[in-house]
Amino acid sequence: MENDMEQANVHTELYTLQLPSKRESITLLEALIEEVADKYQVSEDTFANMMTCLNEAVINAIIHGNKLDPNKTVFVNVEVDGKRIIWTVADEGPGFDYNNLADPTAADRLEELTGRGVFILKHLADQCIFNTSGNQVELHFKI
Image (cartoon, rainbow, N blue to C red; front, side):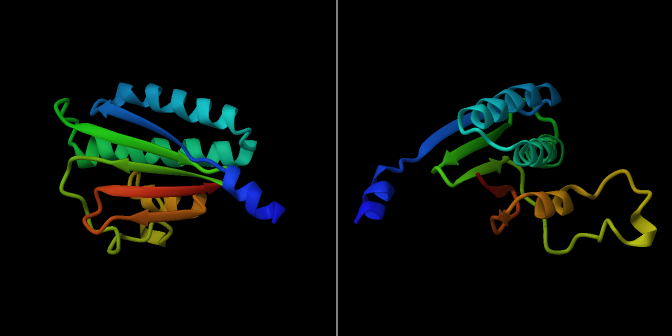
C-alpha cells in the first residue's frame, strides 16, 4: 500500500523550448539542459550524455531538417517523471530514413567528418525513438 501512495505522489514536469533555426540557438538548449540537470540532480555521466545527444539532435534539426531557415522552428520538449527524463526534438523538415544510414564505424568511413549523429544518439541515450518520417526523435535518460 505504501508503494502505491509513493507512486501516486510522482508527478510529471514538462518543459518546452522553441528554437529558431540558427546555430546560436544551441545556447538556449544548453541552458535548459543545465537547469533540468541541476533541478533533478542528474549524475555527471548522464548530464554529459544528455548534453552530447541533445546538441547533436538539435544541430541536425537546424542544419539538415530545417536547412538553417530562420523562419522554421526546432521544437524541444522535456518530460521528467522522477525516474527518467524524456527529451523530444522535432523540426519542420521532411525527415530522413534513419534505418538506412552508412555505418560510421566502417573502415572506409572513419575519416568522414559527418554521419555519426544517429550512432551517437543510439549509444549514449538509454532509448532513442524516431517517428516514422524521421523529423522527430525521442531520447530517454534514466535518472
